[in-house]
Amino acid sequence: MNELHTFLRTRRSIRQFEQRPVPREMLERVFESATHAPSARNRQPWQMIVLTDRNPKITLAEAMVANFRLDLEKDHLPDKEIKIRLERTRRRILDAPVAVVLCLNSDLIDAQPNKKRQQAEQTMACQSVTLCGLQLMLAAHAEGLGSVWTCGPLFAPEAIRSALALPAAWTPLVLIFMGYPAETPDEKSLRPLDEVVTYLS
Image 1 (cartoon, one colour):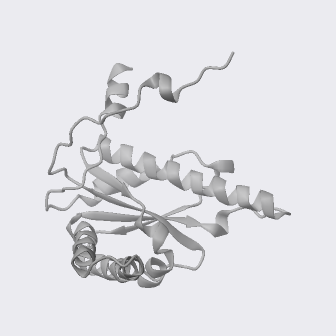
Image 2: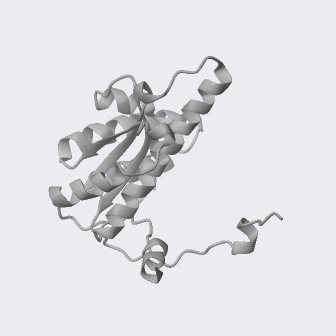
């Protein structure tokens, strides 16, 4: 039991990776474990788009950078700052051995008779995809891989869908980078338990 708790508590977000490929059989184990995540009504509304080759990563990077540039220009940031941020985004995508675009498949969301309940279905599906992503990262940790969760797709879903030729029903929600760690992050600073847990009696 203690070993399992230690495993869960030692996962860290990794942003620097060794430049060596991750074996396909290792990735298959990670993705298989990810699909065992819980989901509302067991609908499993996730789709995982895996990029390991350079060309599709370049396609993704250019689409996200172009979209990000428009947002930054609207914020009236200096050109120098825009270039720094865009290059950082590009390098994160290209330098990661594995990039996983985690999508919500709306074809797997149950139809409801009114707007309020339909919105709840949408939220439940997003929660399910999130659980899949967490399980994916824990499975990567079990294999000795590092990973990091990024939310860029929330700001550029259409650009990503178009660049990767995804079906209209697939909405990109998360971009997870994965590979062999090339850094050892410091221990996280956590809020005290009594600040985040409330027992009612």
